[in-house]
Length: 636
Figure (cartoon, rainbow, N blue to C red):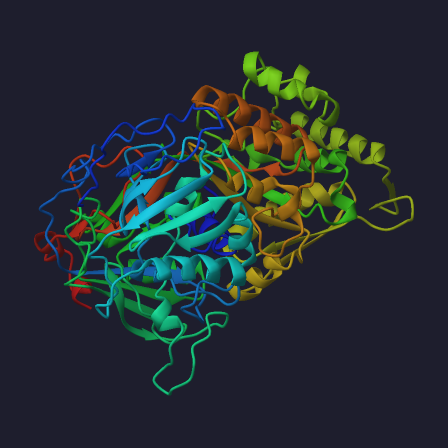
């Protein structure tokens, strides 16, 4: 992956959907409503509550299942896990899109439902013991467990759920957009909350609501230790009340935060939690950048890191603890998602509006040279917004995909129908020169010419690019890219900023090109509006980083969201992917279908990890026998 990609994607997510997540089961009295039922179907007089939901048919786990099959139900509890973050934090309030929330703050909260890591798009009840929806998906009702509790012992109520929904949608523009099809949330029973939608047929909406992080109304509407009323619309470093498996134990503002396991956690014995949350403490230490973080790891100042730099993976772990086995390097295959990693031009700026300009920038990128020189040959070029999954388009459109594309034929590039998308290749010096000639030709077609060795438009204005970065590793990439751009007459600058400034500039769309990406699940849906939809393009902090405004893309997003079944979803996603690619909205980068990890050998995990995640640290545990062989770090 791109250097620091894991943190960049997490950062990008924090800029938008703050905590969209991802036991005792309610018995089902009769079969679930048929998802294929006509939109005119109405809510039954007596709701049928299900223990789980799936976009792929029926959930794999039946009512009353004892635990997820991939956990160790007898996993020991104990130990300290030390993790690391770069930058700083200045708030515990994730609701408002200002400031930088503390890492791991989601550990203190529960959601209505939780996903299973061995299924695609399935969720099971956590705070909710059951969920009911009509056959036309026009609403959803969640029933709260009678024993669901906050850490202060007070019950979790329908009022808390309604308050959480209203607080998030009122104070966070991205949450308001994400839940824009929910017209109201209301208490409809002693333990029931009903969400009404503004449309029927959107199969994903019930599950989206299930991802809602639930906040304590009585705490947020109360007063602090000084008698001052709390304000959920403001950042705060007052330790918040939660209901989850962990609570905040201690923190040093901006530098570290420690969470402790709640021994009497109300949901510790629920089937969805058995075998999880096994560490007594989890601590996040903050470092100024990834270079310092790497050295801190080697000095045993924290336990586990995801290595996103190919150079580091190849050269930086030659140290005694790795040689004698105290540090373990392991790669885990990614089967759960596709990622488009890319150089993302800001289409809100006129100079990037012409697709020929963006294609020219692609021709100038010497990936093969980069891969050999910088990445030790570890990567492959990304050629899909759903790379590595069955959702990635390939070849020429056929069947249902072609039918969908024909519905927007007059609004998409003609190559969509005639040519399979590929990135330029630059495996030889001759190929690199040919690519630069093609880039120059495309710039000329777009109205640019070289004068006095500078690329200028018809007004004589020079074409300039500033790369906005916060990762030293990505600076190496931009430096490698720059000479080819300068040969075309482009004036290139590279701006390195700290994490806080980077967040603020990305939120306010103050950049030419950034390096980031979009992670895609195996069941795409409503989030596609947030990624590529016109309504999200000009909203500060949205995940439409490129600023795409395209009626064809908007129409194809709706095809994805309202797909009638899996085959229709795959066809619609192929169509969307193909149109995004041929509009040249980004300069695709590269990827590796594995997560590279390094850890001090103090931990154990079930023999068979789940299909779609290596689930660290959720289902791992501290192993005292291993820890005793690694030195004093675990006791720090």
